[in-house]
Image (cartoon, rainbow, N blue to C red; front, side, top):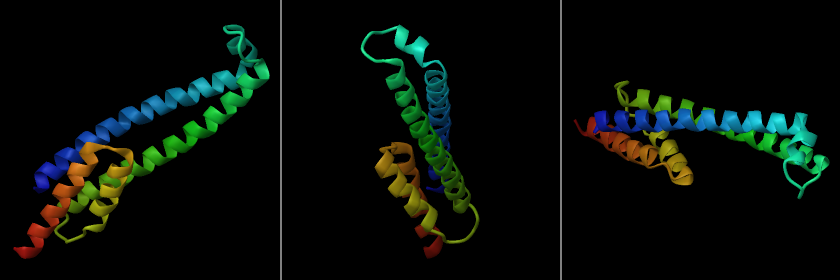
Length: 126
């Protein structure tokens, strides 16, 4: 079960890296929208340049928050992956990853945490 958990955490971390890349692209789009609101507003007629600048600021703040959360999840997933083979019974990282997986609806983190909890239980009984 420990090996299956490591594989699930690894796959989840790969998708997490992809997510961080997309969030970084969103951050760049927000910076462009804030720095060139007239050019962005010129392509359409519904919003003014000031509205586009405000939207760009909102998108910038939102992207920064998402990137920070994704980096924290990436780090915690790494800690949980290392906890499997450290020789100690430590369920806390797997429980945290289970909660994160449920809230983010990430099946790899959910399965990795379940397999990790089973692996930790198997080590305790041996």
